[in-house]
Image (tube, rainbow, N blue to C red; front, side, top):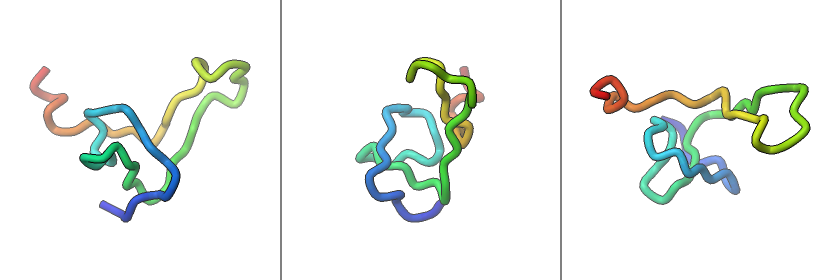
Length: 56
C-alpha cells in the first residue's frame, strides 16, 4: 500500500486502500463517468474490495 493521498478521504469501509482513519492510501485515484452531471453519478474506479468481500 502507498502513502496517504493528502486531502483525500473515503467512507467506503471495505476498500483495500482505506486506512483506519478514513484516508485513501492508493497511489492514485480515478473518478469515473465523464458524462456526470451530479455527484451521485460519479464513482471511484480505483476501488478494490478487501478480502472480506469474498465472504459475503
